[in-house]
Amino acid sequence: MATATKWSNIGIAVQSALAAADTITAITKANPGVATSVAHGMSDGDIVVLTVQGMHQLDGRVARVANKTLDTFELEGIDTTLFDTFTSGTSEVITFGTALSTATNVSASGGDFDFIDVTTIHDNVKKQIPGLANPATFSFENIWDVSDAGLVALKSASDSQAKRACRFTFANGQKLYFTGYIGASLLPTGSAQEVVKTSVVITMFGKPTVYAS
Image 1 (tube, one colour):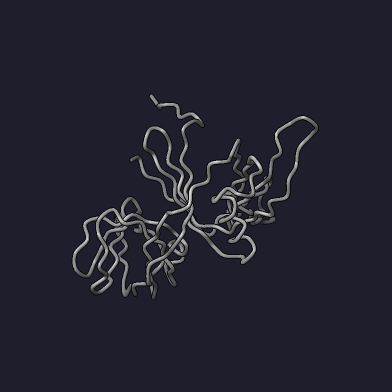
Image 2 (image 1 turned 90 degrees about the horizontal axis):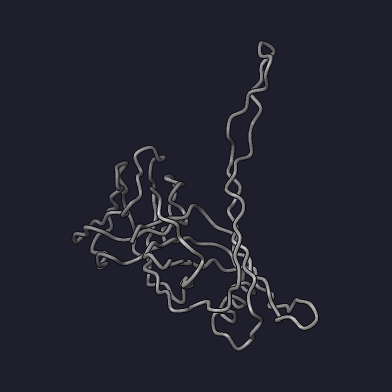
């Protein structure tokens, strides 16, 4: 039986820094995928963002380092068996030094496919196959506080149209990681005698990664 998770006691952290990029020379098609990166210097448990060509399913993906050796590391929890063939890439260790503590609600959308019609003259029912997936989006409503470090950092990322890695940590220890572009104008909204709010939208770049702990 599934265990219900509440939107309560949620930690939301945003990338504050990236380490110097390590070159990746290969990624296996395996479960989990194993990256080759000579003398990478990372440790098990480090969280990295990947920039990848060829194996496009990993571009912009956040992964946790596991079973590292001097020159290799596993992409914990990511099955690359059916992914495209790797050609080049880098990894950068993420520092999550900024916390968002003003969110009052959150909603998600996107991730669905644009479908391509493949109906022939021989069919009597339309047939479709999935095309590209639409980007997933998180929309937050936040208490408007222009002195809040988290909101200020998101506004800065929005102003520079910069990608940022994000981490949700739930009360039961489960985690969600992703990268995305931030939309945060810090414009105040609301109604008379209600708390002043402001909206933040994060549009994912690539796919999210989830971990049970």
